[in-house]
Image 1 (cartoon, one colour):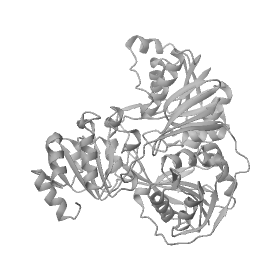
Image 2 (tube, one colour):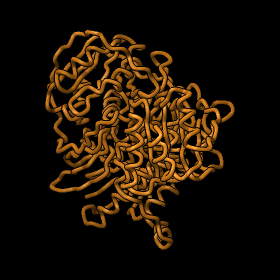
Image 3 (cartoon, chains in turn brown, purple):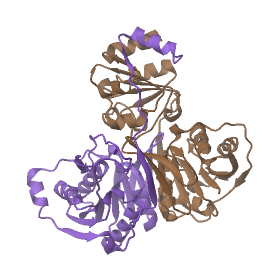
Image 4 (cartoon, chains in turn orange, red):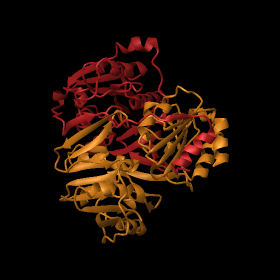
Length: 306
Length: 250
């Protein structure tokens, strides 16, 4: 048994939290070789994660932007003798892993929340309203890991790093540009505290109330689908079934009614606070602390008190 | 340019599913079913391309039980030109890999320049079929699209990625999978619903394409997620802060 783990690289650096959580899921399956596509510093950071036995570093431009055709060709080139191919269930992992699985004639298993044994895994279906245990009969298991469900592996390791190159890039696609918003706030998927705003916030300008509270709490900012669709918040802030899944110590939902699709992305948070003027909003059914109040009064008061 | 759009009949997005008492699956008896929301976005994208003169024909295909015909008719009522209904045994269990293999056979026959698929079906939440189809065809893929433009034999796609947006270019033929912000799907008008009944639909079975649909994943158990204990309502911001301080959260 051996595992090839695709490390997450974002903005030219290793995404330590996503990679370390996936490493802890992967290390239960056998010795782990991590593939890092990006700068040498990212490979060095990955080599420090406990449970990673070897790092393969690829600095090729063809895989620097996560283009699925090139990246899956590289993974296949390196997958000889491997029993499991694992990546965090980030958008980049979700983009490439099913392609890898199809090339291996295997059925991908996405959003794994628990590893029961080498062939058996738990994953949520129907927006997390049911949890399925599935057993794979494929020769190579291809898994994406829901990082919110795993503890991060420790650091302080010193795994050896080897350089690899992609021998034959399919060149079916090209990267044009990234439109990435730089923020000093913690990253949404790994933040200890998340403050999210919904339709009730009403406008992009008023979304500053959410970011103000988030800054006071040292929190990441999240949003419901309604808030993103209405243009109050950026797409990468969407929490929910088809957005990001988070499980922070504290989740503060402001002006969010609590549709099934939103709950799917945050109901495993340790403590949930809901602020909503509608006392019948479904969000109160999952909230530890509910405050029925107008957010335009309550949020400034809360930000002022903290 | 011909565009192919796969559509799936799934549980309506407003329905909260229940796990069957015996743990054998989820209870789909007598629940409202609809077209997968991401597939509606895909159909809308294809129709807009036809309206803009970029696409010449929009073909929709559904794989599932006989009732998937309703989903296909909905897509035709929205404006697709014709349908392919592929009946598959045990439709709810059919996996993305088998779906991708059937779709590959359809693509081989139909020769579209573009396949627009939903990024994920809201039943199994796999988010896999489009990528798998692209792999089997050896085509380029642009997943999670929030903007799509066709020019010079290429598709320029803005993708929703973890840190924001990414713009890429894929050579045609290609697969695009749609995300929420690509468009807002139209409702079919009554006259168009009537017209859709007369649009041609070819009826096939999975066996016609020689694809083995036996699941690769054995479902050992289906269970309810751990529930949350009911919390309390606080009367004021002051009380909320007090509670959070007690638990050392602020």
